Amino acid sequence: MTDAITPSLRLGVTGLSRAGKTVFITAFVHTLTSASASPSLPLEHLKGFRAFLEPQPDDDIPRFAYEQHLKMLQNDVPDWPESTRQISQLRLTLEWEASDTLRRLAGFPKRLHVDVVDYPGEWLLDLSLLNQNYQTWSREINMAAARRSPDEHTQTWLNFIQSPTLRDIADEQIAIEGAQKFTNYLRSVKKHNKYAQFISPGRFLLPGEFDGSPLLTFFPLCINDTIDEPIRPGTLGALLSKRFESYKQQVVRPFFERHFKSLDRQIVLVDVLG
Image (cartoon, rainbow, N blue to C red; front, side):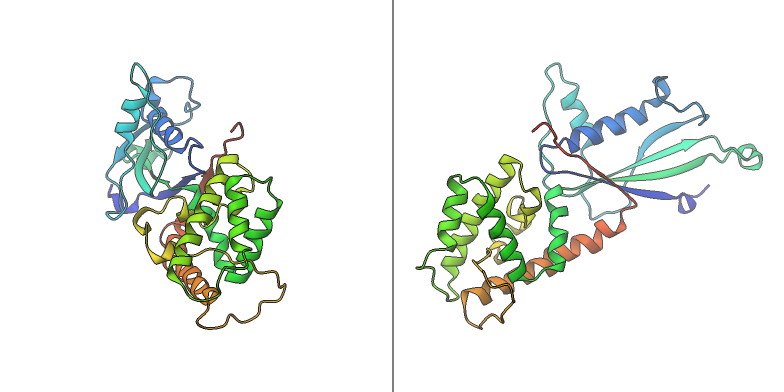
């Protein structure tokens, strides 16, 4: 039977960093690939069941390092794998005896490809940005910051955006300084595991190949008006708004179109004890 007619299912696995995605996927794959030796699994109705790894279908997506992670977890002193910092994929093929007589006599088992896609949950939170403009996003972020219990990074951030000396001109150094303070604030939010929906843009915490680029050199200004007034050209607001839109179109939308939209099922891990 040719592989072309084998159905496939894309299974997304995500969660904020340290939620246990890597360990979950490693245990999931290991359990299924060793299922024949595990009578505790409810697979009695699938005669001849087996699961095995195959080369993944997408050449431009890094492979999930299953073997490396399994070895680390099986050490005499287990090592915790590093957090997910980029998207990765692993193809797991499930196979079992066909129930219909003709297919079984012909020696054609039933098969299903499960393409496990691992990606940072911080990227998932960014999808909400596609429905927001810069002004709306700025108001939501800064209202959430004002509601938080004050800590060093939150207070530094609020003082910065409310400072009367913050010049409303398109100054690159101000954009860089503000982006760094905003990143420190987001790290503080994530550390305290509150207002998770406001840990966005996610690439500020996991920049990857965009580290240091203008795509990550923006921040929300203090905007109190409930009606979005046009942003004047040549101002700091115009510069930051342009980069916000560029982030949406060059980072968030490609992730949605290329990866998220193609998922058939989604598992979201949450650290409820952290």
